[in-house]
Length: 214
Image 1: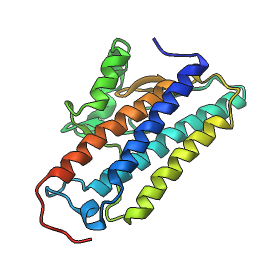
Image 2 (image 1 turned 180 degrees about the vertical axis):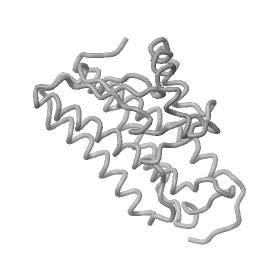
Image 3 (image 1 turned 45 degrees about the horizontal axis):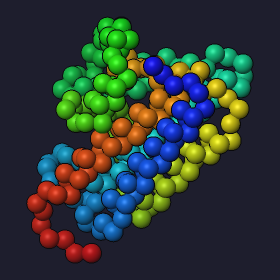
Image 4 (image 1 turned 90 degrees about the vertical axis):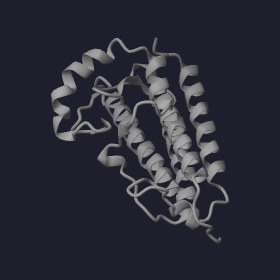
């Protein structure tokens, strides 16, 4: 059942803070060479994983901003996204066929428990293709990446703290593949998504690679 009480937002935000703190701690002290190294041709580097986290948070924060604007304007705060808005996909499924699956996936997601959805998001059992809006940029400067991740968290916190009177449990985002979330649920999704990529980054950094100097 989706949380609608105020503590749901507080707890979900605290979970995301802790998740981001772990991301920052994991990247602290890594050299530019370490962040830029990719163990496989065409695979992401650790720096690209971090940039993907940053872009994903910005995308989700934009959705919360839109919901807040709708609520302030007296409109029903619901976003029904399509694959044209966020073209995330299961790996190996061509993007051009995604619109064909919008209706069946939407119906299927009505019966997927929140716990299972979070588990599949957090764990890398099912491979996904990132949406274009969160495609990472390669070669970003290490300290700038860490600063941007810290600043982005503060932006998300400020957005919610500056609008304390709203019913975030009544604000809803729907996506055919990602499912239905209220704002506390979206924050939990953001945590699970980042934890998924923390695991990916750990695998990249543990992969044998040539010696690189600081």
